[in-house]
Length: 104
Image (cartoon, rainbow, N blue to C red; front, side, top):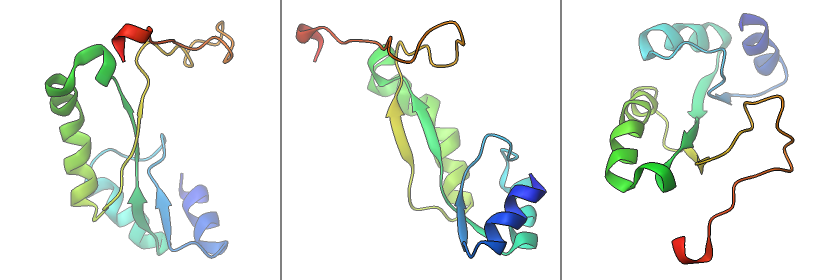
């Protein structure tokens, strides 16, 4: 992770998006980014709005939203991944979930 941050800064970036290898607390991540001269500009969130419904989805996303706010972020990259299997190496990416016409 330190190599990733250092190389991003050496490449001229002032900020970076949340990565899967980064700590998930502001107290842990903030000093690492500061040491590299970077700030956190956004984070990706795998939402499940279709599966959970709006109220449950907001409750589930809230801790990540609060973390981003603590880090000074004004942007979240949100994608609903309900029913997706991209984490399963046995499922081709071409096989993606479909929402029935009546469910839109």
